[in-house]
Image: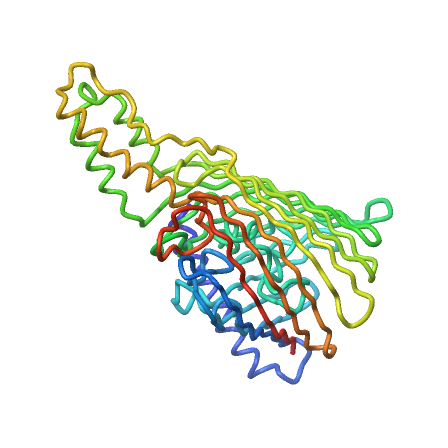
Length: 423
């Protein structure tokens, strides 16, 4: 399936993009072609010298003052071919770890409207597992300077996928129900505490449900996938374990399995609630990651945000947090034969720091308090001022780029000023 997706879907994405350009020339006078864009000019100041800030794992981290993490410009083209067929292409240019040209294409899909209730899409699409799935890059469309990192940073690795999905929607009671089922794969270049690695997630199965009624909506989502490729060099641990046969080190194969990524299942469960009556805005999401791979720790994350909007300025406060649910991963090397010489035992025990370092590189444990204001300057322009105060536990730094290993937990303040346009 992986080869089929790579062989057929990516040429389709390029073909859609080419056709959009052709339509721009040939049909600009008609209603078939619709263009819109968005941009964010964002400045941050990170007061930590040890830890670099990035909104998610796909974006390079920064210390001090920088425009890079939040600034971007995007364009979207909609082609309405007829009542049943349309296509959407969205390109976003921003600072990112993977700067291949095709990876600036966030969305490129064909859609078939079967009837008023059913839709089918194929191509590159957003993964519908959280509230901001369809507009995470459009800062104008949401309250904060950026989505809360504790919840959104980890799921950003699978924020797009290449495949197909099926949408069902209908009125239900006094509200509106939407169900979506998707399948595909994705590649991502991500970085936590250190250098970037490439990850391929295969056999992605996604299910989501949203129900909206009057001023509120709820949603639930599920994602199941498997790690297919991982570029980080774990050969030091693999080679060390391979030095000793199971007769000497019976616990060796068990350690090897902890770091083996092939076919390891990853699951995400999400719940969300939103309320907006034009004066008060409440939004909250909670997510749980369940992983068979020790390098990707099981975590529980979430946030709650409250906004008050009496006029053109909306004042808001957010509390967000992420914690591992299995916080007791051991660096124990496992069983060693009682017949092993003392020198061999000492060598095997010396691998413990390697195991601990590999496991700690993905450990996240922190919470953040945010205060901000959003000013509606004009119908197409908003400004946002936000201050984030993050409390990071010992060895829980994986949301940050670690330049100097702190001796203990840290407290970091990130101040942000954004201008967001739509055009």
